[in-house]
Amino acid sequence: MTQISYPYTLVGLQPENVNQLNSNLSAVESVVNGNLDADNLSASANIVGSQLSSSAGIVSGQLADATVTDTKLASPNNSTRKTILDAGGYLGGATTGAWAWIPTSGTSFTISTGFATTATPPPLWQFVTADHAVANKTTNFRVDMQVAVGSTSPSTVVITAGLYAVTISGGSYVFTLVSGSTAGSSGLATNTISKFSSSTFAASALTTTSMYTFGVAVTSINVPLGISANFQLVRNNT
Amino acid sequence: MTELAITPLVAGADEDVAEISTSLSDIQTVVNGGLDTDNFTDDAGILGSQLSPAAGVVASQFTGTITDSKLASPSGSSYTPILRGGGATGGLLATDSCYLATDGTWAPSPWATTAVPPMLWCYQASAYAVAGKTANFRLRVWLASGSTVVSGASCVCTLSAVEIRGGAWDLYGTGGTSNPAHTPFPAANSFTSAIAGSWTDTVGADAFELVDGGYYAIAINPPPYGAPAGTAVGAELSVSYTDA
Image (cartoon, rainbow over all chains, first blue to last red; front, side, top):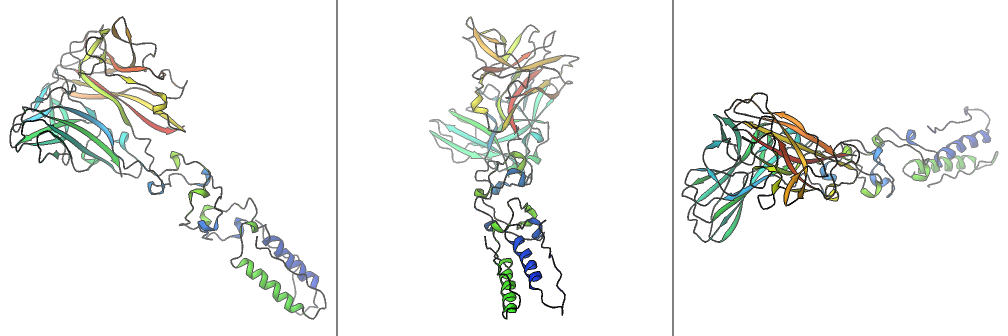
């Protein structure tokens, strides 16, 4: 530290020694004129950014680890949604109340509450918590659905997509709806494509290392011909 | 610099006290808010703790680079899927090296190009490169067993280079295969999973190197006596990024 150290100690009631006073003042001068450093500042100096040079030359090592939050980034991307799982297929002919499972091929639906493991499996996704976690953020998921309708009137058909946990029992895949993951259609019209989304649901609704896939519930009326749907499971971290 | 310029006092002069007062006043003026950068040494070493907690430092004052380690919430560390699929494996023979086809079946290799093709992925290095980062690729495999009790059977799952030879899709081209893992089938009526292979885009760092522009598919080798009835295998290729 560059500290002011007086070369002379002036004593009261002694004859004036201007040279000693000059030396002491000069000591102040030499420190203030370009020799101050951090130790001359109090630990709580509270210097603000505008007091630093506009090109201060702050380098990475002067930036503490894990301190730059998304709000400081010009282009944070944690909040954008990334597609984690997608599938789609033809839904025409599905009957009221049936669950439609989308085989991996995406070419047709198998209507069942479960089907044998000897068949083509659904598009399975294994959720592993650590694979989707971002520090200091909550991992969120959402199910998106696009429904295409041909020239046959869909009437009042309602198609509700959801994410389903998949287990195996008695040699068959078994499906259990994940709470909060459903996206229901409404107002379907002929010769249209419409999109629907579930509410955002937290990763805590899922079980790590468990398997998941899409499923569809058909309500109100059988699905007319010419209707197909596509699904995406999307993730963001907020 | 707000320079402190003290006029030397002259012994015996009548105005000495006034000059002392002037000098002290000059010091007061400089120290009480008149200091600037030139008053400090070039290596002053001012600490972050001496800055205001709400200093409002702006980007132009920062000349470094912000790596993931500086971020409170680095996004690169989470995995993003690239290629995924699976299919039933029951009945596949030990001699069958199979690729995952676009219809969700495992097709024995070689397989005519007139039939269902593999679910191809083309690796383009520039598409996955991020400055200052290492791309970490990983193949996670899942296996399912139906009601048939599977004892000791395992399946090898890899990411394998795909080529066309003699009018047929062929696995294990010049691009090679990712490090394989013999993953056992689980107990009856259950799933299991494992990391079947992982590697980076750093040249020379891994036994398996992706070839820029190469074509790849998820591939399996069934167990020596064939895959048991009711089994299924799938895999997901994904990527994450860490500071290089």
